[in-house]
Structure formats: C-alpha cells, structure tokens
Image 1: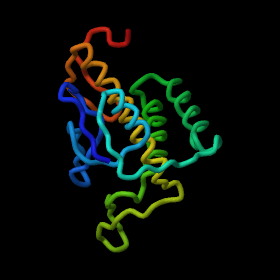
Image 2: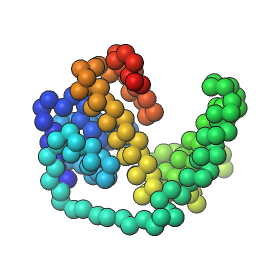
Image 3: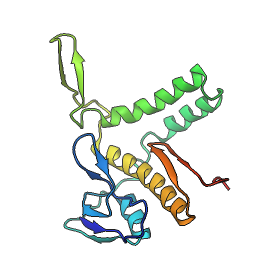
Length: 174
C-alpha cells in the first residue's frame, strides 16, 4: 500500500523498513500493514491506497494460541516483586515464547560450535510468520495510539521502546 498522513500528525504509525535493522515512521511512503496498523492510521486520518489486500480467517481456537500459558506466566510474574530474580525469570519465559515464534524469520545468526562459524538460525516448531507479524503490529499499534494521544494533549515523547515510553505529560494514567 502507499500512504500519506496529514502534515500535522506528530507520530505517524505505519512502519517502513529501511533495511534488516532499521525501521522508520515517515509521513508518507509504501508499506505492508496489518489490520491494527490500518485502523490506527485511519484514526490519524491517513490516506491509504492498497495494491493488494488479504484476509486470514482464524478460528476461535487459533486467535490466542498461547493465551492460557501467557496468563499463567503473567500471574506467576506478578507473585514476585518487580526486579526480583523470580520476576525476571518469568518475564524472560514469556519473552522466549515470542522469540520462538519469530525464530528463523530474519537473517539473525548464531554461533555454531560444530563448524566454528555463524550460521542463519533455522525456524523452530513454534515459528509462525502470521502470528509473529500480528503480535508485532498489534503492540506497535498500541504504542502508536498512545503516542498519538499524547500529541493531541500537546505532550512530548522523550523515548520509546517496544514496551513503553517516557513523556512529559503529568498523571498520564488518569
């Protein structure tokens, strides 16, 4: 798709890939986007022209394939003080599920002790490009919606990571 945000959009929400390691969010460009990215872009009054559009029908069972285990890991993590070894252990466990979903999809390399050289990681039994794409896009869209809201309140964003941001808006939770 090609897209163009209005000039007054401070935090455009559609990612464009410069290369394997660099993602930018321009006011206009060409992209591949998911449903959550589309909905946020439309909320930001972005004009989008589609070249192709695909719908992937999920069954009710497949919508949250890791839902129960993630809920359990989150509960176990909350049972321990933030920053404690047990809390960090459960955080790493949850993150590892996502890591295994995206395993082997990029050009990430690992050191192979047998050949004493680095080689491209192979996909694993949990690797799934559809789930990986949806998960990444959904989280980016949530962060993007928060950033857009902050700009509507004339706030400034200092820093953004994959799971949070720093802003100058006081009492943002309220």
